[in-house]
Each structure stands twice: as structure tokens, then as C-alpha cells.
Image (cartoon, rainbow, N blue to C red):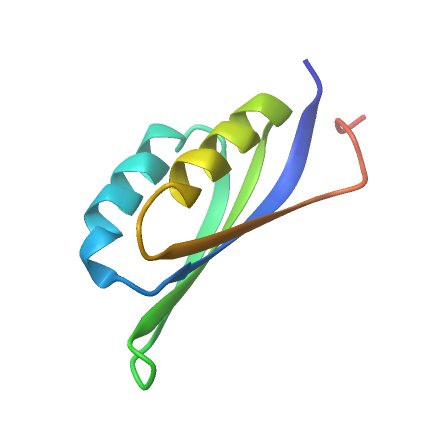
Length: 85
């Protein structure tokens, strides 16, 4: 199955859901290349970016699970390149 590199951008507006967010990310940890979180205290939100290398269905599953959490905005962008040579 073809793997893709993607970046999942997450804006956490309801900080009560961070435990569930972290639990979901842990479920997919074998595919995660890296993660960066930025707390924006002035606005009371957190901004998280997750780089992932996984099959399309895994990326979609992760994005979908995150998108169902209340208080989160999630967007995914995919690399145009396919599997590494």
C-alpha cells in the first residue's frame, strides 16, 4: 500500500480535550514523524502540527478521529510525492 507524507494542523480551542487528543495521537505513534505544539496563552488555544508518514487510509482515520473531538479544528495537507525510492 502506498504511503504518503502529510501534515495535520490542529487548533485546540477547548483545552479539556487534550487528554483524548493525546490518546488518539498515541494510537497512531508508529506513523508519526514528529509533532510540535505551541500554546498561545493570549488567545487560550494551542496550535499543534503533526508530521506523518502512513498509508492514506491511516492518515484519513487519524484526521477523522481528531476532527470528531469537540473544540478542535483539524486540516490535513498531503505531499505530492509518493513512496520514497
